Length: 564
Image 1 (cartoon, rainbow, N blue to C red):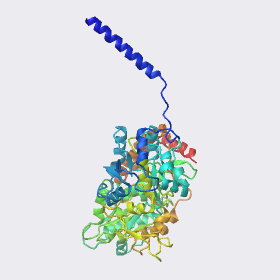
Image 2 (image 1 turned 135 degrees about the vertical axis):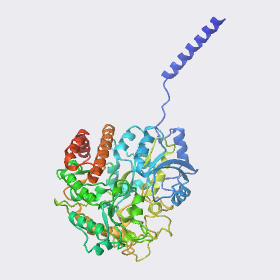
Image 3 (image 1 turned 180 degrees about the vertical axis):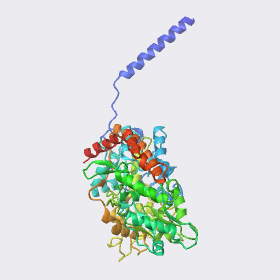
Image 4 (image 1 turned 180 degrees about the horizontal axis):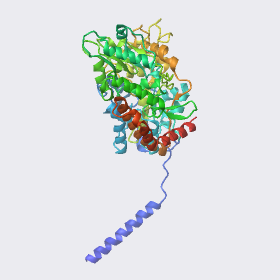
């Protein structure tokens, strides 16, 4: 009986395998391409189509949809989930967002970990993913191509491309795909954002003029240290302080441009530039870099640079700038005064700091690092986890609208901004379109504080009502126009964002991590004197070569030439 049962089971198993093989080999009906006339779509895509309203209309969907979004933490935003713009935009779009906030300073590490562990959400928002990363994860299918989605649903994005063809060209990868939407911020003062600020009342107190050379700057800092400019009888003045963790605020961002061109306008290509021969080059292995390190070491040894400048975060620097009672901070670097003081704070100190023009170095170098693009790539990405990619694209596309840009970056109409009145003049001297009612730079929960895509064109920004000499945008415009634009480079230039093949991108990312970590470590060590610059410079150069600096530059050169 046992044998008969075994035999029967064996026959059944063989028969099942034969049927499976036949089924496998049998031709399957072809699934039509999405959008083909008279053919059906996959169920998920069909469901999404039924949910969507016509492009450019609101709400975006007929039934509420939830999207999961990874966002860069912003110290000026209390809570993305309860933010007033989040709530307003959800009501308008019928799209609910589940936020995953990652710390600003470790956003790249968190993103890389999420992508490699296959634990990532529908959307990556405001993390500013580099072109190299877009190619790596785009070619793997993790980042979705947006071309067809834009064509079908991107009303505002297509308008942007039509108005600014360079934008589309810049964000299109070599394989023809667009993997990310940008944040457009044609901010005039941001294009030359590597600024130094000095406390002007102290200059008057010590009887010195605004410095114009590195030697004059040294003399000013020395006077700040020795002449008790805050008049409290204590040696508590901090002549110069930085943070490596805020906007254009690291020690080399401004100062090194008096010795060698050093554009740090992009985290992925900082230190790289196009030299006078049209070749991709690096600043950190040049004689001028060594000369700049020697200068900064001199400042440090004489107690003119705060020791914590290499480790403190942005909040600690602001606490220094807003010291209770007397002013103790003489100078600091940053894209605006809010990097080291409280913008519009009760102390009012922020407005008493004025920009130092690019300083003339001992070898005649004097640059204002310049970035003409006015665009941050990789601001919005849809991943292959998204169940509703068209909804996601529509949600981001809406952020380019005029009112939505105002709401997401400034806040509520009538409270943080208003429409311009007849006769009001903008920053550029032309009829204004809108007016800011509360200045940018304070912690709040009504807007995204420049996180994620928006459409702040040059016309948009300069059409804000000019509110006099105390208007932050007016201050930044004038300081940039008068003190920095005259020193914008003419023979060298900043490297634009570049796309690499997947193989190149992976190699570039590995090399950049190794090289930049080493450069930043040694910059700090040379400045504080932990490493002897004269004895160890040759070893430093050799280590850069051993880390394949030449290969790194070669990869950039190949891609730069291919994108000309």
